[in-house]
Length: 159
Image (cartoon, rainbow, N blue to C red; front, top):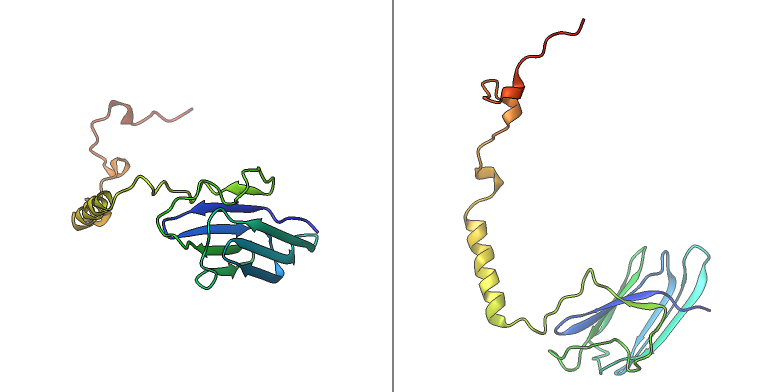
């Protein structure tokens, strides 16, 4: 039995853990208030995987969910204390070789204020109301025959 490789990231109201096991079968995820247990059979060698971890903070086991795909199992752990940042996934500070931070989904929401979000929303609305690429004229210099470029002169035929 071996541990499945996993990536995790933090959000304001939840922590996400993705167990990277392709073609997983017999997936079992058990959410406890301070613990997560994961097991499955999968991968190219149909190996049995098992991960058990004591979580950094408490979660809501009833509000937590998981979803299996062909490539992984994504777990959404609902935080008991919304708005509190988790500096790491596990209670222990030890580095686990099977666990890494998912920097593609990581977001420093801790420093963001609601005012900044509303300013961003207003900016997005303004950009959308200005129109998109459909409003721009179709300008392709290669199609114009009356171009003033000096290097666009007709080349003599090769002999």
